[in-house]
Length: 319
Figure 1: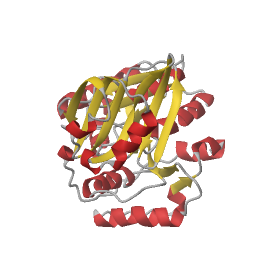
Figure 2 (figure 1 turned 90 degrees about the horizontal axis):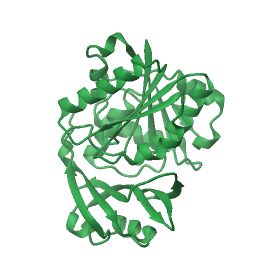
Figure 3 (figure 1 turned 60 degrees about the vertical axis):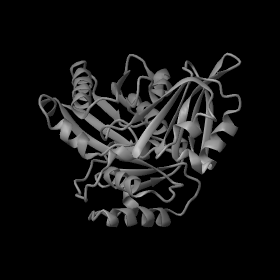
């Protein structure tokens, strides 16, 4: 039986960064790790960010979104089954940040997966700078936390853990979920400070099966792709997109750009902007949010062309 871990979390929570550290820990324990990335569209930025992990012991697979739900389920099942048959001892699934976790449990109970793979852990990554969420975003946060064995806070900078738990527990109550987080459920440290003991506890996190009121409306979220863009000042562009209310409610910006023949990855939320070099890239910026206005946003991102994609199921968003 092959163990499968779900690493979930809302848009911009830091799932990909966590998976990088967690994969290194698992490989150090002589595990062969398969990583399944779900992204929306043909360019998977998160997969690009993890490409340097690929080795004899680590394989990276992508399940592209933008299709109907049945098609998505078939693709994910095929990837999981392939990795299991190829002898990988652990499979990490990083879904979209717009993801209803109930889908994950349903898929792994279908034939022929249930005979070969087993849910081992559900680990949810939550931005420690969690702000006020819309009704739909609050619901998604609940779906990702309700069944988590462990909740890890990213972008940790000595925030008050009790205040963070109170905020999350408030969202859980709103969705009539019986779960309430306790200190034992959470990890509050920057990822780079995780010790082997912390990773050991995450590796035995398990999962829960709490119920909650389901009210997901996937039409709320859209993603704009700007291909072969010509952004001259990425920091200014990102700042404008988050500050201009006419853009809509921008939640996440990510992508790649090239400067002086060096590729850089861009990862931004309203309170965070990270830019770092990467091995290879493709010129794309992805803007994800609610009620986005493409005509306004395109004024800030000169590009050869753009595409607007509306989520057609709960799995076709971007991390």
